[in-house]
Length: 451
Image (cartoon, rainbow, N blue to C red; front, side, top):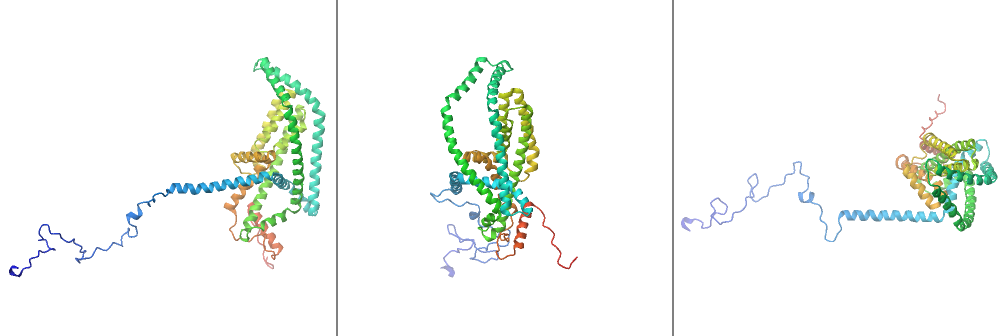
C-alpha cells in the first residue's frame, strides 16, 4: 500500500519469492505465450505411428488363447476334416470294389487296345465293327495262352513232383557236405518240420479252397463287368468323356479338356510301356529257362509277364518263384543261372526300357510308388497293386498340369457350344491336344487368292 505499489508478488518474473509456484513456459519459438508447439509433419518420421501403437504387441485378454494356440487349432480342424474325407472316400471305394476295380481295369485295357481300334478305323471300318474285332482278337489270344499253360502244366506236373523230391534231397546233401557244413541232424529236422507243417495245415488248405471258390465267383463277375466296360469305352469312349466334361462349368471347360488329355496320355503311356517291358522281361527269362531245360518254363514265363505289371515287387516275387523251381528241380547251378538272367533283364528294364518307353508318363518318386502300391494292395489285393501306380501317376500329372500349364479360366471349351460348327469344335480340341503334347500349332493357311 506504500507508494501506491501492489502488495501481491509478481508471479511471472524471476523475482518470485521462494515457495511461490511459477507457471511453465509454454511460449513457442516466436515468443507467443499460452500455445503448445505444433508437431513436426515435414520429417521422414511424419507418418510413423506412436511408439506405443507400433512397437508393443496387442495385449491378450484374460482367458483368451494365444495366437499360436489359435493357429494350431484352426489348422487342426482343417486337417481332421481332410483326413475324415479321405477315410470316408476310401471306405466307400473299398465297399464298392466289385464296381471300382472292373472300371479301372477297363480303362487300362482300353488304353492298351485303343491303338488297334484306331488302326481299324483308319482302314474305313465302323466304330462298332472295330471294337468287336479287337475284343474277339483279345479273347483268342487269352484262350490260346491259357490252353498252352494248362497243357504244359498238366503234362509236366508229375515229373516236377519227382524232381522236387529229388532236388530237396540234393539240397539237403549240399547244405550238409557243401561249404556251409551244417549238421545233418539239424538239416533233416528243418525239412521234417516243413513237411509236418504242410500236413498239419491241411484243414486250413481245405478252408482256403472254399474261400477261393467264393473268390472265383467274384473274379468271374468282375471279369464280365471289365469286358463290358472295355467294349463300351472302345466303342463310345470319346462321347462318354464329352458328357463328363460338359458337366463342369463353362469357364473351366478348357482346363477340364486339358486335364482329361493329360490323364489319358499318362495312362496310355504307362500301360503300353509296361506291356512292352513285361514282354521283354518274360522273353529274356523264358529263353534262359528253355535253354537250361527248367520244367514249367512256359507257365513261369507267363507268370513273369503278369508280374511285371506290379511295380517294385512283381518282378521280385515271380523271379523268386522261377529261381526256386530251378533250385528244387535242377540244383544250385541252374538256380544261379536263372538268377543271373533275371538280374540282367531287370537292369535292361530299369536303365533303358522304362526311361525310353514311359518317359514323362510316370514321374513318381520311389517312395510315392511304394506308398501307393501298399495302399492299393491293402485295399484290393493284387488288383489294387496293379491299378494303384498308374492312377497315382495320373493324379500327379493332372495336378501338375492344373497348377502350371492349364489355360486360364474363361478359355473357350472345345466341348461346349452346341450351335458352333463341328470343324470349329475339332479345331479347339486339336489345339488342346497340341498344347498338352507340347507341339507347336500348325501355320495358319493364307487367305484365298494370296500366294
